[in-house]
Image 1 (spheres, helix red, strand yellow):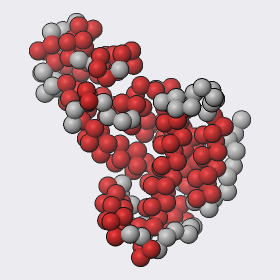
Image 2: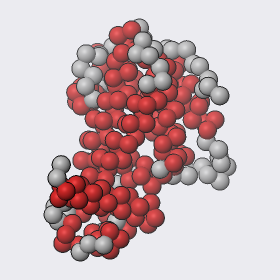
Image 3: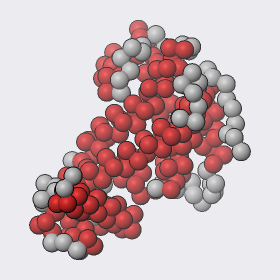
Length: 236
């Protein structure tokens, strides 16, 4: 990479890092091209050499955040061998709330209810994290299923409209070898993770629950029960 390319890459990183700082400090409405340009020390038109507009830059930021999260999930999984997908999954389930607690604004941007300021970005961001985060969990989930299948609803027990949606989701996360009932259980696990994290990050019960760690751990135990794997408390 020549000097010009290095400088261009460095400025691109600065733009995304500044967008993240503004998001954390003032929410999505604060992330404007003018504010980013002012912080970085360039003119707003200069940003258009890198991005087609604000939405394009926000999508790049979302992809950075998703990649960061997936990196932490992968690191948590790597603490256990591939022949223990049960331990890998529980490690990832615990790592997700930990990342979200440290990055509340970022979690809200990627996984929360879309702000009007996000425009039509929500669909693109949701598709990205479904592929990347769902794929990271899905790889271990498929490995667990192949190692020791657990009880799931039969396909003919599922409503036709649900079967179609589960089939579409199965393709997105790369779990085509699995029956639809197993995809339903996967979604049920995700709904528990999402609910537990969102209660914490968005402070839905912050007046009474000031420490959500025990609730996150109960969520982890519940997922182990769904997957019919032995629950093991976190290492201290």
